[in-house]
Image 1 (cartoon, rainbow, N blue to C red):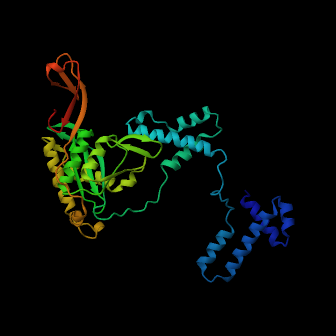
Image 2 (image 1 turned 180 degrees about the vertical axis):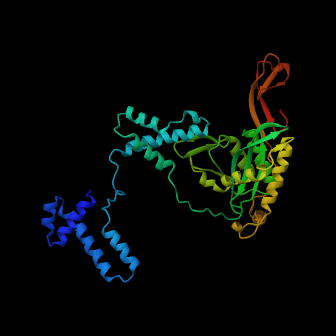
Image 3 (image 1 turned 90 degrees about the vertical axis):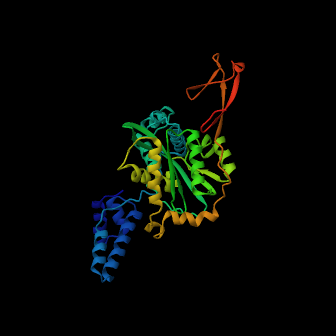
Length: 375
C-alpha cells in the first residue's frame, strides 16, 4: 500500500506532464497503481470545476488530498482457514451447552481455544482467534422486528427475583409468559426451576388467559430440552411433549445464544421484575409476594401504551380470545419416579422420606408425584 507522500509524487509528476510509464518507473510502482490515482485526480478535478455548491467543492478537495485507503473488506484471512473456523465453532457450541447446564466455570476462554488450536498444530495468532470469537458472539446484529397474528405465539422464560420473606433473604424464580401479539404478561414466583414448577406455571397461565396460543417459544432450558442432536436439533422432554399434546399447542426452541428470538419475554422479565419489586421487596410469605406480583401485572396489562397504538395489552388479549385453543380442564401434573424401598419400609423423594407397605421392602416402586400429593 502506498503512503500519502508517494501519492503526492505521482500526482506532481502527472501535473508536470510525465506519462504513466515514466511515473511508474520513477516512483517504483505499477502502471495500474499510477493510473488509479491519476484517473481519480482527473475525476475529482472535473467535479470541482463543474460544481456550484461550496460544500460539495470542499468535500471534493478533501477527498483529493486524502491519504490512500486500502479496501480490506474483500481480503481473505490467510491463516483463519475454514478448517480452523469449524474447530472454533465447535468449541463455542460446547461452551453453549455448558452454559445451558450451568457449568459456566468450565467454559473455554479465548486463550484456551487458542492453545487448543496450537496443540493441534495450527499456525494462527491469539488476536486472530479472539477477533473471530468476538465477531461471532458479540457482533452487533440488525434485528427485524417480529410481528405475530392473534392467537399465534406465546413466549416463556425464567427470571431470578431476590426478596425478603419475614426478614430473611430468599431467591425465587419468576416463570413469565408474554404473548407475541399484544405483549400480555402473566407469571408466578416459585422456589425453583424444577419440572413441577415449570408445568404448574403453564397450567395457571392457560387457566388465567382462558385459552392456549398455538405456539410457545422456549430457550434451551433443561426442563424443556432433553438433549441436543447435532448443532441445531433438540429433543424435547417427555413432560413438555405430554403437556403440548394435552393442550394442543406446538413448541419451538431458540438457537443457542439467540435470546432475541424470544425478545418479547426477555424484555418482559426485566420490566415486570423491576416494576413489581424495585420499590417493595419484603413480604411475609411467597403467597403474599405472588399476590403483589399479580396486582402489578394486572395494572401493567391494563395500561394503554403508545407501542400498541394507545390500547392496552388486555385489549389485545381480548382480540385474541376467539383465536385461542379452548381449555376443557386443567392438565394433571404428575411425575413418575422410580424408587427403591429401603429396609425401614420408606422411599426417598427430594430428600423427604415417605412410608410404604412393609411388603415392598427392597423392591422398586413407581411413585406418582402430584402437585400436592404422592401416590
